[in-house]
Image (cartoon, rainbow, N blue to C red; front, side, top):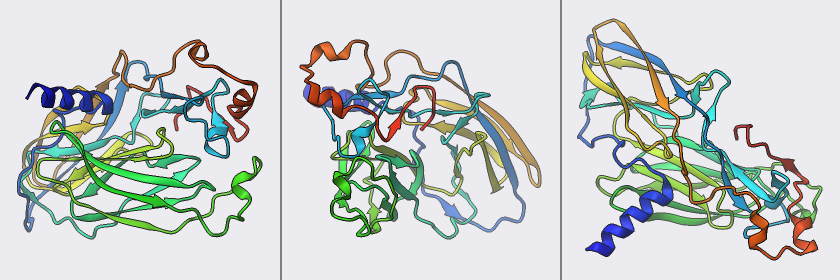
Length: 316
């Protein structure tokens, strides 16, 4: 039993997930609405934007394509926090908690996740259980999708499939340091089948650990991803009192605010997320990292960012 508890804690820490901030699972009922209200608002991050995740390219070099994107000191960066100049917290999930009935889900459009410059984009999505996700490889490099569900119960593999490149790339393209075009590879469609009480979907590349994408599984239609201004909106909400919550895989504290929806009225809310501090990731940049490794002249040449030089300050 102690071993099991320890494994759960290790998994939670490794993923940085907020185990207490996922929605309560209730059966949702679609009903006709004679009167309803709406909710709009914005999400802001208060405090210093956390440092990006850092992957040392001496351990994951891949010099052919993906390794040619780095900060110039041998670090491949992944910034999970998309924050604007005024603190607008973009690409986070906002949802209503405690809503048991309301409008129809409507037509489902599977989220499209693209592998572009060895990143999975978008970084955060909303998916539905027993519905599809679509993944496309836009890179002249092979990727491998490893998709999991995770929660305080631990992770479980959902699917593991290759992500092929476009046939438009010439055979020798992957060996050319100057080749940089994005052609759409074959569409990979997979169904998301979560086990009970699990609400967090995550996807990584088996070849490139700095490629990841996250999603929250919607059990009703009142979910949204904040836009480029950190804004969101819900319509056709049954009158009542609910909690509006914010979810991001690397925010550990529960962010919620109680709101009341009145018939035929627009309600507004501003949500503030305190920027997390301290070490957030297992993969983190450190100073003078190369003293830990034997760096040959050949390896040093492989980490030069000939394709793109990343900046710590720039969002991905």
